[in-house]
Image: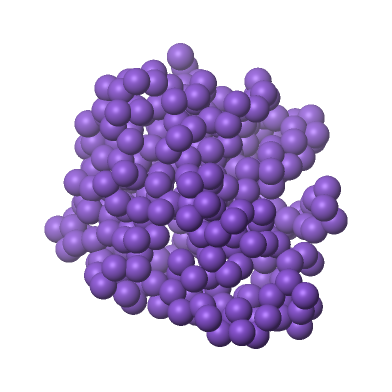
Length: 322
């Protein structure tokens, strides 16, 4: 599919990547979204908390929303999308990944960029309600990688799943990790690592045979966290093995449903490999939009709706018409 020419034009003050990224993460407020929590139990006895919000009238359509690293279903990039879709007659199921709902998960494992088994459990649960004829999925950052991997892995997708949207997607996890650990992103990396280590600390007492204090103290950078914890807790050899196997880039050629990727060219978290131009040109189901601006999930525009949210709704409606 030819590359989509983006129409995104941010306010002048939001053109810088740092400004748009930080403002959107820390200053944006979304009001008027009423969420109802539902807990589902997974096959391995752990749980996921789903935060539902609904259209005014009963709907047969739902969008599943996936957050990014150390995010939650209450982040404005999730509630903003939920509000827009609810206002347009579509229910929203916002997923909190394991340990991200405000309550620690039960197992040594947690969540990661390639944990599509958890996404599949959510899809199957939504289908079991018997209400929805149309399902859409929108992922942000880590969640974006997850959803593209999910639809490209070769599993039999339910006929109800019509399309997916991936925003600020680290298609190549190794390259993205390298960018995050670079000097220009030092402030972001420190913040992410602090959150991750805070969540890992209680597991030292819960699972002393799985991780030691020495292991924990050796974590000085994001790649160390993935070496010491993410890889070992989820069946990978090491961080590089995890990045190789969990990156969605390799799965894009196999995608068979309409999938929109929106990656800003000034996203400081993304490496060159995270812009899958070749894969988009060779697969008619992959639509790649690369706005000049937007930073990382910072697609600010006039009004309260962000550009990526507007485009997600447009994409869903276009697919429905086709």
